[in-house]
Length: 100
Figure (spheres, rainbow, N blue to C red):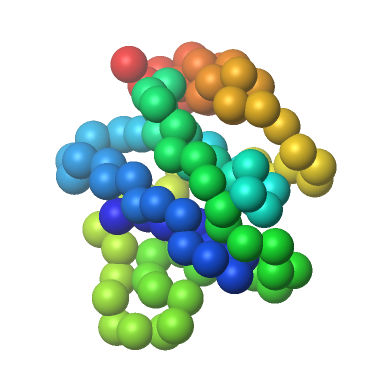
């Protein structure tokens, strides 16, 4: 499961194991979202805390729960963007990485 947190938890999305997914996340207070592939976004309030890092592969609290995942690419964009823009990025990343 994958959630985002900036003072409040938003999510999770649950990518199937042994499959490749493109996941976009937007931190923007009550207008935050997570978009997996080109599905329906999970939107809501992820909080407004100042970001201080990224935790990949485990819980942010440091619990011994590791992810069963391989990360191929990470793109960080300053500012806000829409779910339509996220879908365009998802399509481009899928083409670039030969993901069906």
